[in-house]
Image (cartoon, rainbow, N blue to C red; front, side):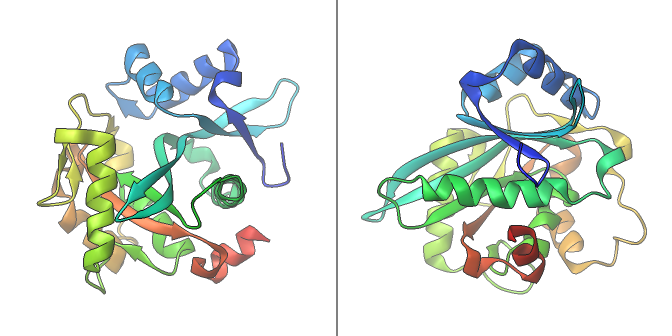
Length: 237
């Protein structure tokens, strides 16, 4: 575990106990979580970022599963990091552990790429809190309320989303509709009054009205130190 409070683990190095704790944490906050569905998501990833309170024994309070690979697009090899199942227990929302651990983890993974010079994060969001991670920590990301998505970026988003989700991805509205969606429990779907006027939250709700059914908005940002906001720079340090 590093000083961010996160522990980056290869998927095939997870213990049975860690896998059970991950599934249990996810099931407490999403409807429709089954063991088969959880294992299917995990099988498609090669890294997991675990957030734990120190023990002994260590107690899991958050995690995200990650796929890291290099893909060819428009004559260029690019790095792709994709976040799968992700959850942080609400009791830990006031901490910054996930943001700090995530930024450190993806920068570390990016340094291990063999051919790609640029690394992109493809994120799918069924909740506004997940989408809010982008404007807080990244300067440029898409889609967003105050700028149109450049055609080259849109083409990359389409290609990466189609690669990962096939016909479950709708390029017309940029949304993934999973055959078996995981839906946030009602208390996590509710938008607090203090968030209703936030332009990023409003944009997410308008862009992905089916989030209440588990629809996922496809988002993309480049992972680099130069693309981090001041908050992102602080987390990286």
